[in-house]
Length: 492
Length: 122
Image (tube, rainbow over the protein chains, first blue to last red):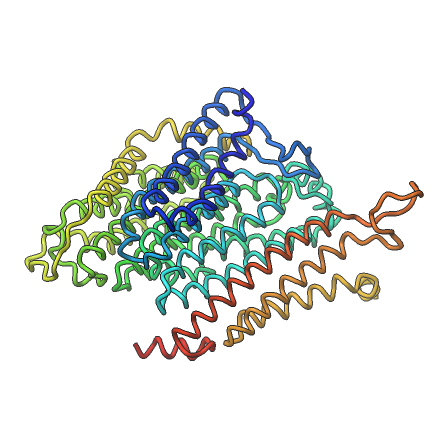
């Protein structure tokens, strides 16, 4: 079928059209605008599923924009890895939007909600494009769209804290894209290519002839994506930005946006850099150690927080480092673990932020110490929080175990048992700061003091869907890990 | 001497990198938000300069097909890319400036240190 060949571009265009229409319709019909966003996201999910089926059946294929062949034209790739990430992005965006549609009514002024819909869809479109693009400059353009929209969904709330956090995020993310573009320029200087495939061929020779250019570019890429994905020590913008944003934005930012950049770094490591570069420079080693420090420090900082959303944000710094650890270990099983963690953490952290959002909506409480006994008042929300915490710690039956398991297996396979210890220790630290909340919420002697509003049905159902996802990724992980194992085999 | 000769020969690369460092440094160290945005633009422009300089061919002509098929042309691709890059930089700048307006309304200052003090008092 002809239309099936156009799927990669249609998945990006559908939310773009939605982003254009949503604020227009919102002026007249507020409800209809929300449904339109839901519809365009749903369409993207359906198309992504079709794309996955097609790729599984016919193998990977390249889509040439406007029928211009590379190296001049822009190329999109649909291979199992990219489509996996694409599906994670669109499916989780759809799920978070279910939550957002109700929650935003209470967090934002009515007039800006239409604009929020537009920003949300632009963000989804840019992330979908980043997962599939096979062109460095195209990646840069969509990274900038992603950066502006992700700042904008924070500052849309317009309170003092959000504005300041959003500005800090914007400046650091502009530094990230500046470094990235400089790296692209340095690579273009010695190869004359921007397409990933051609670049990889040319770089094999360029590493020998112009090592300085390539090394500098590699360093700039690590800084660029490290800043954007909040790799320790470049994480300073994250806690404020993720904690002050409206809850759906926090879920989106912590759940998906930082992962997109980790995924891009992964694609650049394995699709752009030739094997000889990774072998001759300790790039993986640098990423690995930064990740190991990030895992520990993220958890330690999270323990010190008194604000629930701040704690979740710091926990993201620790968790994103697991994905970088998968890249850094540079081993097949560890990569599967890292990639699986993208999906698991996206679901879990989004659900935790939703639960936090529901708590704040119903009670207005943000401080962890004020939450004693809250579990008896709003059981469903806190059960969701418990399931999320369990997955963060890696308790069997939840997705968190599977990714840590694979990471540990990968580390053992290449004899780096130190990092198994890091993984175990971080799980312990996670338990130290997640479990007291859960225990106090249900078992505390004190009764919950504040007034409690009823949590709307839509919010509750979004949380239930999240819990189902977490358990599915924990128990029926085999199809997905098989897909990933197959996908990463080509890199070794 | 060889390095110095290389630098003089490729002075535009050198200038671009100096500008990049000035931009990054100002952006990260200055407290004034407007200066941060200006520095961001300097940084972006330096990369654009570098990109366009890569495409330049010594003694080349503009890449328009004319009567002489043997003529040496300048690489048009970096120029086309940088046009896109400029558009992106403009939109980021516009967004950053509008944010500063809002921040000024909320805090009454555009100085980052003062904002931190204000927030520390809260």
